[in-house]
Image 1: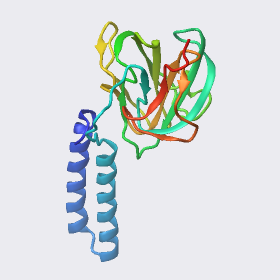
Image 2 (image 1 turned 120 degrees about the vertical axis):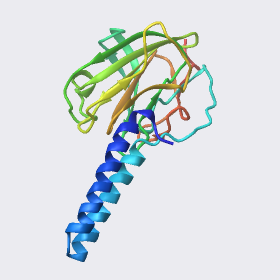
Image 3 (image 1 turned 90 degrees about the vertical axis):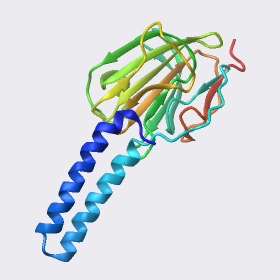
Image 4 (image 1 turned 180 degrees about the vertical axis):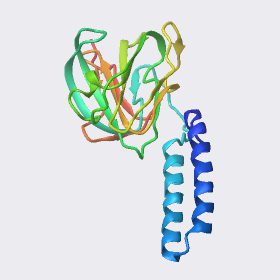
Length: 220
């Protein structure tokens, strides 16, 4: 199963690969070169298909838990000042995605979308300290009864050139449903109230809509 954001790219890539294979097969006479080029074309197609895959998952929804919005690895757990929306200190958990991860972004919580904004910007590597403020990004805030307002931010990386965001202000959304898509690698930051209990550790691998990032145990 492939995500809808990849349908056009997959079709174009498939047509290019078919045309390229025909040209290589009919115009390249050296057997070793012909097979090398054909294998390269096949690898390109496989990479595009795996990037836009959208595997079916069985979600265990719980509004007392904040789910990871994406697949990847936890690279940041710290208290920081969030300057765009809250303008105060928040608990930040960041998940970095490699090009091999599933790139569907999911809502970490269900509730009402109170803020949704797209920011054009640079394409610094996703782990750069300034990427969350200077890169192309989208900021979405969802208000839930258990946690209040929780912000998640899609951040484009060096390879990403387009972020897709489905959130609209005033919209009611369900936990783990599609929030957007980041094409070709990046990261997502989640900003939680101070005192929220963290359920993951640095360098831990997580799955979008499956892994619990934090819970409201211990939250004042």
